[in-house]
Image (tube, rainbow, N blue to C red; front, side, top):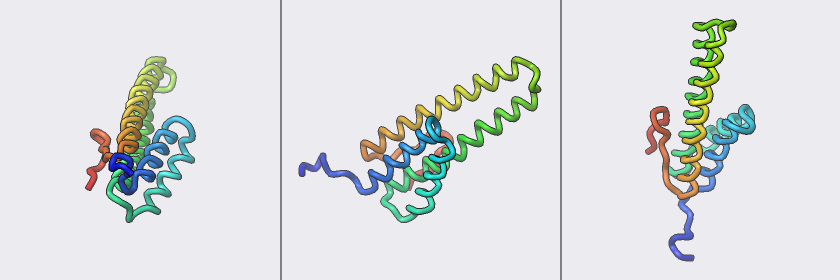
Amino acid sequence: MPPSDVKPPGQGLAVAAEALFLANLMLAPGLAFAAIVWLWLRHRDTPSLARCHVDQTFFVSLWGGALLVVACAAILLLGGLDWEWTWVVVIIYFTCVHSTLILFGVVGLSKALAGKPYRYPLIGPRCD
């Protein structure tokens, strides 16, 4: 095989983690997150590429979920359920943050497919 066809060790697991991250955001939130947790717990001793992507998807899923739930709850508590502008702000906030996480997930998946590490901006942990 030519050198360009050789996959880096752990690339399949990295791609699976990033695909599960996108599935967690768009298709099956609870089920895909459970699969990410299982990957994170099960594959502790994996090549650095896979470890980086699995750690990124696990911790960013936690941070992203916290950002969405806590901030939306705070907006609802501050604005009240009856005020229509509360719902406008909640929907705009949720849409912006959720879309940004999806965009970062697509970039992470493309990096995993290319066999390169990726760190999610701001909320992603450092890779080794």
